[in-house]
Image 1: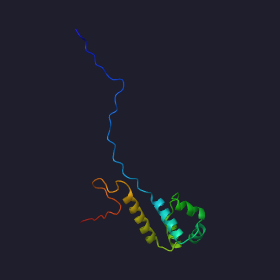
Image 2: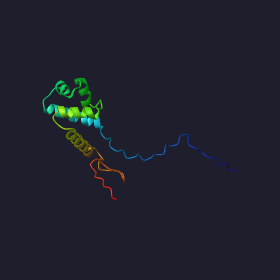
Image 3: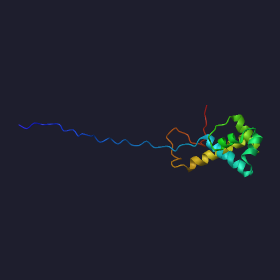
Length: 127
């Protein structure tokens, strides 16, 4: 009479799980703001020291803001906007445009899950 035995492999193959779709990482506001501030300053052919003096901050702090290392307060952003000859609203619009442009260039930027919004989407509420 033959005996039956259950044979189990020593190592089970890991079940492959489908990888979740990776969404592009959105850039940080402070990094995009910093690049925009640097571009405005360089368009005016100013040094860090000149712009920082008009804004009432140190050149080192302005450098950190431009590199996206520091997240300045709204008062500081307004002072920098004024020192660069623009308004807070104008600067904010420029940064928002830069953010939209970067997201549009990112791979898979146009794909979103149902119910999710993308930068630039217009939302309306109905009563």
